[in-house]
Length: 310
Image (tube, rainbow, N blue to C red; front, side, top):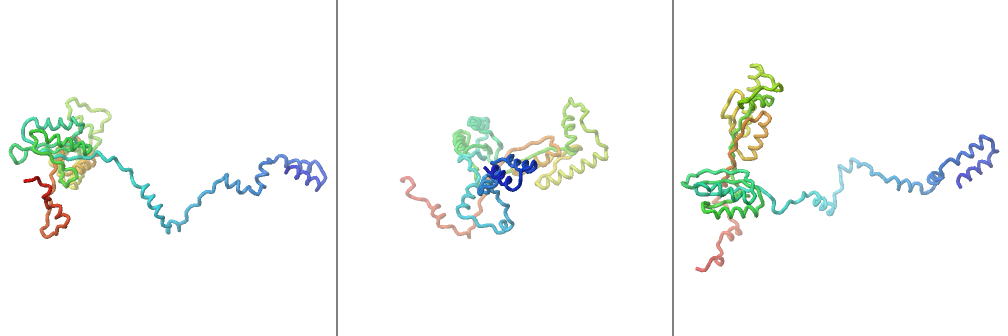
């Protein structure tokens, strides 16, 4: 034992006295396991195993001159960075244009077929055209392509429907009309403005105090100028001005209409009316001097073998 060796060596060096005896007996208190671990030749390996080696921080040279990744690492990085792919039949927005006979009951039959298939109609616009007894109906729905195609064919089977065109994926011009009434007194007075329009309105204690004429005039003109400049950015215009609100008219894409509503919402929206989306396909431009590829010419030519016998 290590403790017995230490005790015997101490006894040979000096005679036993109370002090030396206490010093010789003192090493017996030391844990033998600690002594065996600290004095063993494999103590360094034991320490490394019990304390894993931490990775040193990268040097600045590693960032300035990184090692080029191998082909396997590059491919793995691309595969792991790719976002998860959605379903093949993804729900997307579809724009259907129906040419229908201008007669009563057509709108209810069309909406009934779409409701029967579980479609939620996002927008529906119907109006007569320049042709007598012909109306144009623009419908915006969301659903899977296969289900929308079945609904389109079912709509064409209706007797008053002339044709149903699917503008999904085509280059179309989309427009929607917005009329919105916005407060110019500020959002803190919006609650009082809404309640003042009802006949049973009474002033609450928590509502803001009335502004002085000068402060109210400066505040309304500042809000009016801000709303006017904001409408100009979206190519809209102010069509009505009152002492406490304005009415703005905007004709733009549905996405821009949504963005405009979000921007004027902090001012306080009193009323809003949207017409729904109207769509018309863009006309292609042909250049007479542009050469047509041979593949396009082959596709444009009619294969006589596919024609029925005459």
